[in-house]
Amino acid sequence: MSRPWPCPSPEVHRNAAVVILRLPPPPSSHRNEDAVKHSVFARVYPRLATWAEAAGAAEHRRELLAGATGRVIEIGAGHGANFPHYPATVTEVLAVEPEPTLRARAERAARSAPIPVTVADGTAEALPTAGSSFDVAVTSLVLCSVRDVPTALAEIRRVLREDGELRFYEHIRSHDRHFARYQRFADVLWPHFSGGCHLVRPTDETIAESGFTVTEARYLRFPAPAVPMSPHVLGRARITGD
Image (cartoon, rainbow, N blue to C red; front, top):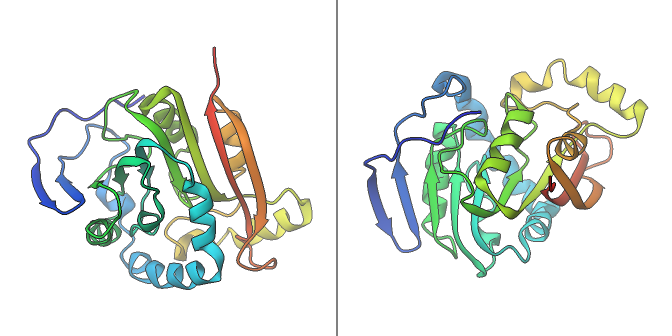
Protein backbone atom coordinates (compact mmCIF):
# COMPACT_ATOMS: atom_id res chain seq x y z
CA MET A 1 0.00 0.00 0.00
CA SER A 2 1.43 3.31 -1.01
CA ARG A 3 1.46 6.17 1.45
CA PRO A 4 0.01 9.62 0.90
CA TRP A 5 2.47 12.20 -0.35
CA PRO A 6 4.26 14.35 2.19
CA CYS A 7 2.75 17.77 2.76
CA PRO A 8 4.15 19.84 -0.15
CA SER A 9 4.93 23.49 -0.40
CA PRO A 10 2.65 23.94 -3.40
CA GLU A 11 2.66 26.72 -5.91
CA VAL A 12 -0.99 27.71 -5.74
CA HIS A 13 -2.88 29.49 -8.47
CA ARG A 14 -6.35 30.73 -7.51
CA ASN A 15 -8.84 31.68 -10.17
CA ALA A 16 -12.61 31.65 -9.49
CA ALA A 17 -13.58 28.10 -8.55
CA VAL A 18 -10.27 26.39 -9.19
CA VAL A 19 -7.15 25.71 -7.15
CA ILE A 20 -4.34 24.11 -9.17
CA LEU A 21 -1.57 22.46 -7.19
CA ARG A 22 1.95 21.84 -8.47
CA LEU A 23 2.84 18.79 -6.41
CA PRO A 24 6.13 16.90 -6.15
CA PRO A 25 6.20 13.31 -7.44
CA PRO A 26 4.99 10.71 -4.93
CA PRO A 27 7.50 8.38 -3.32
CA SER A 28 6.10 5.32 -5.06
CA SER A 29 7.43 2.75 -7.48
CA HIS A 30 4.14 3.12 -9.36
CA ARG A 31 4.92 6.72 -10.30
CA ASN A 32 6.80 6.85 -13.60
CA GLU A 33 6.26 9.89 -15.79
CA ASP A 34 7.21 8.02 -18.96
CA ALA A 35 4.74 5.24 -18.19
CA VAL A 36 1.78 7.60 -18.15
CA LYS A 37 2.74 9.87 -21.03
CA HIS A 38 0.56 9.19 -24.07
CA SER A 39 1.02 12.38 -26.07
CA VAL A 40 -0.71 11.36 -29.31
CA PHE A 41 -3.65 9.72 -27.57
CA ALA A 42 -3.97 12.68 -25.21
CA ARG A 43 -4.35 15.05 -28.15
CA VAL A 44 -6.89 12.87 -29.96
CA TYR A 45 -8.98 11.71 -27.01
CA PRO A 46 -10.70 15.04 -26.19
CA ARG A 47 -11.99 15.20 -29.78
CA LEU A 48 -13.37 11.67 -29.55
CA ALA A 49 -14.87 12.50 -26.17
CA THR A 50 -16.68 15.52 -27.63
CA TRP A 51 -18.36 13.23 -30.15
CA ALA A 52 -19.19 10.69 -27.42
CA GLU A 53 -20.69 13.42 -25.22
CA ALA A 54 -23.11 14.36 -27.99
CA ALA A 55 -23.91 10.68 -28.61
CA GLY A 56 -24.99 10.06 -25.01
CA ALA A 57 -21.95 10.05 -22.73
CA ALA A 58 -22.92 13.43 -21.26
CA GLU A 59 -26.14 11.89 -19.94
CA HIS A 60 -24.18 8.96 -18.52
CA ARG A 61 -21.88 11.37 -16.70
CA ARG A 62 -24.83 13.28 -15.26
CA GLU A 63 -26.32 10.00 -14.02
CA LEU A 64 -22.94 8.99 -12.55
CA LEU A 65 -22.64 12.19 -10.51
CA ALA A 66 -26.27 12.89 -9.65
CA GLY A 67 -26.78 13.32 -5.91
CA ALA A 68 -23.07 13.29 -5.04
CA THR A 69 -22.32 15.35 -1.94
CA GLY A 70 -19.36 16.61 0.04
CA ARG A 71 -15.72 16.13 -0.92
CA VAL A 72 -15.05 14.13 -4.08
CA ILE A 73 -11.88 12.59 -5.48
CA GLU A 74 -11.93 11.83 -9.20
CA ILE A 75 -9.35 9.31 -10.32
CA GLY A 76 -8.04 9.70 -13.86
CA ALA A 77 -9.91 12.91 -14.58
CA GLY A 78 -8.53 13.14 -18.13
CA HIS A 79 -9.27 16.51 -19.72
CA GLY A 80 -12.06 17.28 -17.25
CA ALA A 81 -15.13 15.95 -19.09
CA ASN A 82 -16.93 15.33 -15.80
CA PHE A 83 -16.39 18.80 -14.37
CA PRO A 84 -19.50 20.49 -15.86
CA HIS A 85 -21.73 17.71 -14.50
CA TYR A 86 -20.91 17.95 -10.80
CA PRO A 87 -23.96 19.07 -8.79
CA ALA A 88 -23.89 22.04 -6.41
CA THR A 89 -24.09 19.60 -3.46
CA VAL A 90 -20.41 18.77 -4.06
CA THR A 91 -18.24 21.09 -1.98
CA GLU A 92 -14.93 20.38 -3.74
CA VAL A 93 -13.25 17.96 -6.13
CA LEU A 94 -9.68 16.67 -6.15
CA ALA A 95 -9.10 15.63 -9.79
CA VAL A 96 -6.09 13.34 -10.17
CA GLU A 97 -4.55 12.90 -13.64
CA PRO A 98 -1.06 11.51 -14.43
CA GLU A 99 -0.91 12.27 -18.18
CA PRO A 100 0.67 15.73 -18.64
CA THR A 101 -1.23 16.83 -21.76
CA LEU A 102 -4.59 15.76 -20.39
CA ARG A 103 -3.79 17.27 -17.00
CA ALA A 104 -3.06 20.65 -18.60
CA ARG A 105 -6.44 20.54 -20.33
CA ALA A 106 -8.11 19.57 -17.05
CA GLU A 107 -6.54 22.61 -15.39
CA ARG A 108 -8.11 24.84 -18.04
CA ALA A 109 -11.49 23.08 -17.75
CA ALA A 110 -11.42 23.44 -13.97
CA ARG A 111 -11.42 27.23 -14.25
CA SER A 112 -14.99 27.17 -15.56
CA ALA A 113 -16.26 24.33 -13.39
CA PRO A 114 -19.42 25.04 -11.37
CA ILE A 115 -17.76 23.82 -8.16
CA PRO A 116 -14.22 24.19 -6.70
CA VAL A 117 -11.79 21.82 -8.44
CA THR A 118 -8.17 21.04 -7.57
CA VAL A 119 -6.17 19.37 -10.34
CA ALA A 120 -3.23 17.25 -9.17
CA ASP A 121 -0.61 14.97 -10.66
CA GLY A 122 -0.84 11.39 -9.41
CA THR A 123 -1.72 7.82 -10.27
CA ALA A 124 -4.62 5.62 -9.22
CA GLU A 125 -2.18 3.34 -7.41
CA ALA A 126 -0.68 6.17 -5.34
CA LEU A 127 -3.31 8.82 -4.72
CA PRO A 128 -1.85 12.13 -3.49
CA THR A 129 -3.96 12.57 -0.39
CA ALA A 130 -4.41 11.41 3.19
CA GLY A 131 -6.65 8.50 4.12
CA SER A 132 -10.34 8.77 5.03
CA SER A 133 -10.57 12.19 3.38
CA PHE A 134 -13.43 11.94 0.88
CA ASP A 135 -17.15 11.27 0.80
CA VAL A 136 -17.22 10.09 -2.82
CA ALA A 137 -14.68 8.61 -5.25
CA VAL A 138 -15.34 8.74 -8.99
CA THR A 139 -13.83 6.59 -11.73
CA SER A 140 -14.90 7.35 -15.26
CA LEU A 141 -13.49 5.26 -18.13
CA VAL A 142 -10.17 4.92 -16.33
CA LEU A 143 -9.91 1.49 -14.67
CA CYS A 144 -9.46 0.01 -18.15
CA SER A 145 -6.04 1.64 -18.37
CA VAL A 146 -4.52 1.72 -14.88
CA ARG A 147 -1.60 -0.65 -14.37
CA ASP A 148 -2.88 -2.40 -11.23
CA VAL A 149 -6.65 -2.36 -10.69
CA PRO A 150 -6.71 -4.11 -7.27
CA THR A 151 -4.09 -1.68 -5.92
CA ALA A 152 -6.05 1.26 -7.35
CA LEU A 153 -9.23 0.05 -5.66
CA ALA A 154 -7.34 -0.45 -2.39
CA GLU A 155 -6.17 3.17 -2.67
CA ILE A 156 -9.74 4.30 -3.27
CA ARG A 157 -10.82 2.44 -0.14
CA ARG A 158 -7.98 4.10 1.77
CA VAL A 159 -8.97 7.66 0.86
CA LEU A 160 -12.73 7.18 1.32
CA ARG A 161 -14.38 7.79 4.64
CA GLU A 162 -15.95 4.79 6.34
CA ASP A 163 -19.38 5.58 4.89
CA GLY A 164 -17.95 6.81 1.57
CA GLU A 165 -19.21 5.82 -1.86
CA LEU A 166 -17.54 4.79 -5.11
CA ARG A 167 -19.25 5.99 -8.31
CA PHE A 168 -18.04 4.14 -11.43
CA TYR A 169 -18.67 4.41 -15.18
CA GLU A 170 -16.45 1.91 -16.99
CA HIS A 171 -16.36 -0.25 -20.05
CA ILE A 172 -15.90 -3.91 -19.20
CA ARG A 173 -15.42 -7.42 -20.52
CA SER A 174 -18.71 -8.58 -21.95
CA HIS A 175 -20.78 -11.12 -20.03
CA ASP A 176 -21.50 -12.73 -23.41
CA ARG A 177 -18.70 -15.24 -24.01
CA HIS A 178 -18.81 -14.84 -27.80
CA PHE A 179 -18.48 -11.07 -27.61
CA ALA A 180 -15.78 -11.46 -24.93
CA ARG A 181 -13.81 -13.64 -27.37
CA TYR A 182 -14.08 -10.87 -29.96
CA GLN A 183 -12.84 -8.39 -27.33
CA ARG A 184 -9.84 -10.61 -26.51
CA PHE A 185 -8.91 -10.68 -30.19
CA ALA A 186 -9.21 -6.89 -30.50
CA ASP A 187 -7.29 -6.36 -27.25
CA VAL A 188 -4.07 -7.59 -28.87
CA LEU A 189 -3.68 -4.21 -30.61
CA TRP A 190 -6.19 -1.94 -28.86
CA PRO A 191 -4.00 -0.80 -25.91
CA HIS A 192 -1.24 0.35 -28.28
CA PHE A 193 -3.33 3.10 -29.88
CA SER A 194 -5.75 3.87 -27.04
CA GLY A 195 -3.49 5.06 -24.24
CA GLY A 196 -3.09 1.66 -22.59
CA CYS A 197 -6.82 0.93 -22.48
CA HIS A 198 -7.75 -2.77 -22.19
CA LEU A 199 -11.02 -4.27 -23.43
CA VAL A 200 -11.22 -7.46 -21.37
CA ARG A 201 -11.08 -6.32 -17.77
CA PRO A 202 -14.00 -7.59 -15.66
CA THR A 203 -14.01 -4.32 -13.72
CA ASP A 204 -17.51 -4.81 -12.31
CA GLU A 205 -16.42 -8.14 -10.78
CA THR A 206 -13.10 -6.75 -9.58
CA ILE A 207 -14.85 -3.94 -7.70
CA ALA A 208 -17.09 -6.48 -5.96
CA GLU A 209 -14.04 -8.57 -5.04
CA SER A 210 -11.99 -5.65 -3.69
CA GLY A 211 -13.75 -4.76 -0.47
CA PHE A 212 -16.77 -3.03 -1.98
CA THR A 213 -20.44 -3.91 -1.98
CA VAL A 214 -22.05 -2.89 -5.27
CA THR A 215 -25.36 -1.20 -4.48
CA GLU A 216 -26.36 -0.21 -8.02
CA ALA A 217 -25.23 -1.37 -11.46
CA ARG A 218 -26.73 -0.55 -14.83
CA TYR A 219 -25.33 -2.35 -17.86
CA LEU A 220 -25.44 -0.72 -21.27
CA ARG A 221 -23.94 -0.87 -24.75
CA PHE A 222 -22.31 2.35 -25.93
CA PRO A 223 -21.62 3.86 -28.42
CA ALA A 224 -22.68 1.02 -30.76
CA PRO A 225 -23.26 -2.70 -30.06
CA ALA A 226 -20.52 -3.94 -32.41
CA VAL A 227 -17.73 -1.73 -31.05
CA PRO A 228 -15.39 -3.88 -28.90
CA MET A 229 -15.47 -1.44 -25.97
CA SER A 230 -19.26 -1.08 -26.04
CA PRO A 231 -20.15 -3.13 -22.89
CA HIS A 232 -20.34 -0.59 -20.05
CA VAL A 233 -21.40 -0.55 -16.44
CA LEU A 234 -22.60 2.51 -14.55
CA GLY A 235 -22.95 2.00 -10.83
CA ARG A 236 -22.29 2.73 -7.19
CA ALA A 237 -20.59 0.82 -4.39
CA ARG A 238 -19.82 1.21 -0.71
CA ILE A 239 -17.00 -0.13 1.40
CA THR A 240 -17.90 -3.56 2.70
CA GLY A 241 -18.17 -3.64 6.47
CA ASP A 242 -15.90 -5.90 8.50
